[in-house]
Length: 341
Image (cartoon, rainbow, N blue to C red; front, side):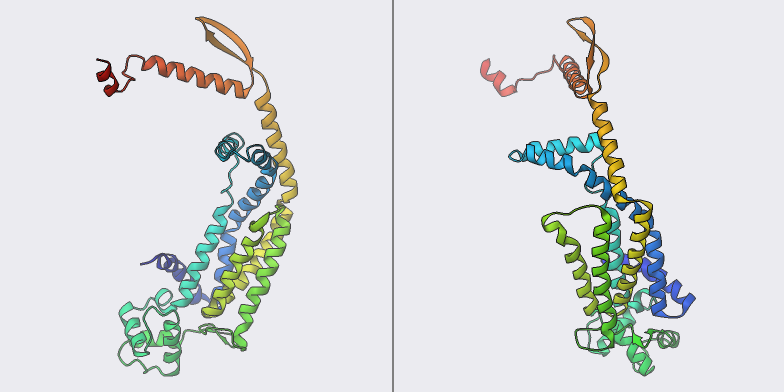
């Protein structure tokens, strides 16, 4: 089983359960989308906070990049130190996007192969039916075509399927407001283009609104990344059964509503100010002097040091202890000792 199979299997069981409850493939996709978006809402909250935190770190990042523009190694060291001391984590907001991608690819796999993931028909029967249609078993439209043929003529595949399986395919309600969600829209002018076009409109609306609401200003090529990623999935919408376009449209609309709610709950501009204040407090704390007792020349001495100086003293002490511990071990290569002899 490939990665898409691993993603499609659990989603298929969820869609099967919802379909048994509502009895319509289109409404099952909509209800599934709402459930996914509700479950991912805590992750969106985390992403909103992470975005605001990244915006607050930008002045520090830019200062480091400017100061060490010609020394990339030192620049990376300073960014790592910043991560350790101030909690800066550039990958903190990636989890929601990754999960969203995984769900999208899983849904694509399910709408490709509903007979496998929703009805759980055996692979041998599906392969034989696809071969009878002159299609490869892994053709992404094969299972949609099998459903269409069975609904036109229940005897078309002879004894390949059992009577119960034929009945399940005949009763599989894939019509949604007169549109067969098993069909591939393509680029020809027809009613199937409704949902792909809605995918484009809702995608554009979501990107524009969420980027304005995020409080983060992307620079250079990063400004185009959301558009490039979204357009990739819109292209899918024209190439796969129209059920995917329905999912993508509803998902975009629901994410837009969640973005508005998040804006009210966690205003990124206010968060950015709060986080900037936290960073400034940490800077002041690091500069504050502390009284520490150290041993110098066999005598205890009390010194007033800041956080950076304290870390330097700790490093020096660790080196001295390490040197004392291993002072009797050979540190000169054996080959060099042989030459000296």
